[in-house]
Length: 80
Image (cartoon, rainbow, N blue to C red):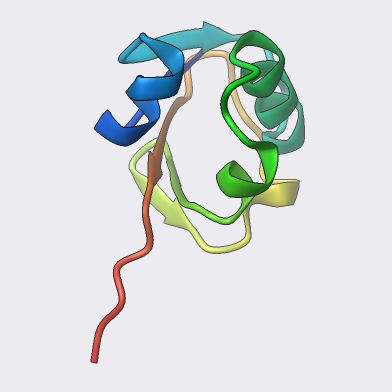
């Protein structure tokens, strides 16, 4: 199963630093995570930056997720 790691802010809503979910793509992963942790807002997760297997994905909705994938959510950092 894919391993999802939560930011410290997200851990306030999950009480877990990480979890494992069964998903074959990013949309399924978001569904699984928000079903397990209803306090996490789906819209907020979809607006966050995400790294899948160490690669930051700018538009992850169609990305495949392998059973051994690692997913990390990040808040966008504004530059200037």
